[in-house]
Image (cartoon, rainbow, N blue to C red; front, side):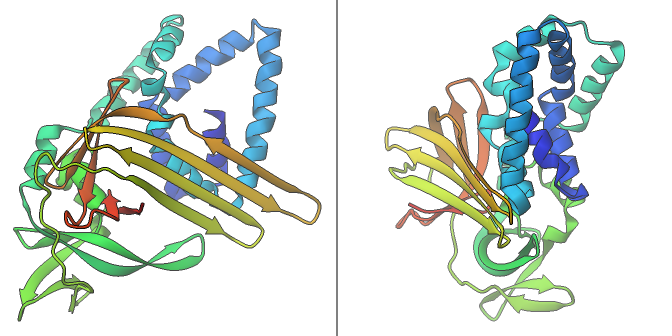
Amino acid sequence: MKFAAELAKACPEEHAIEYQRWRERNRIEDLETVVAALLAKNKELQANTSKVDKATEQKARAAGAGSCALLKQLITSTEYQPAVVHKDMVDKLLSATTLTSAAKEKTEKVQKQSPPLDSDVIKKDLAQIELVMFDYGVSHSMGMVSHQTHPVLLFENGEACKDMGALVFPGGLTAHKAEHPSRWTQWRKSWGDYELLRGENWKKLHFNQKYPPIEKGFRLNNTFHHLGSFSTGDSMTSLIKNYQFFSDGRFVSGAQAYASAETANSSTAFTHVSPDQKGRYEIEGYLLTLHYENGETQYKAIVLDMDDPSPIWLNGAGFVE
């Protein structure tokens, strides 16, 4: 909780919405109220919390310009959802404190505004896909420009979406389009070429290969990694997400974060390794379903070449062996 809060302080306003939603999903405000009540009665806990405060401040400083990327990685990862990963402990803590009626109303309002992922909505949206192809685009992050290959969803009605994560967006494709209209456009087929409407002009997709839906029951037997690295000269942040898939339907996921910063007077560095989580997986069409042992189910949009299943793309991010 404190580490995420420290990272959020260094991030611009566009990250505030995602951070606030994470807090609401995990009832962080209520947990902070409980922690404050416990601290008032326990001097030993106060001392330990002071150490945590200093450690998290140092870690956040070490992240430097990569703070926002690290924050996004953490609050969207399975490992950083305390209301799920530590559900029993969270329930016990919150049950020990009577929430005010205002807090209860706020929780109910958040639940209405942020609908959970609905597998029926996802399947309905998947049925509208005609093709998945790839394009080459330029992205801007923290003052840096990078060129990336990314999947593009081509729908039967002529719409196209450059964000594959739209397939697993709360509220479905309609909600995603309303919140991220810039990621949507139109597509057409012209003289055998597939084109996207870019501004006022039609331009060909950079790649011609088509990626059909994956056959139900398809299995992977590989370990995949996604590396995100950010540098601004005096600081470096690296984020690694891992998935190991087995041919019998099992999987193991984990993540590591590394950061370092150099200044004229000092240098700092830290490493964070999330505990591995296990479960079973299913692949059908463009959907990967992860059933974790803790009872949570996650959905991720997936694209791969069944004849050469590496790399794979999960929610648009490339993972390699």
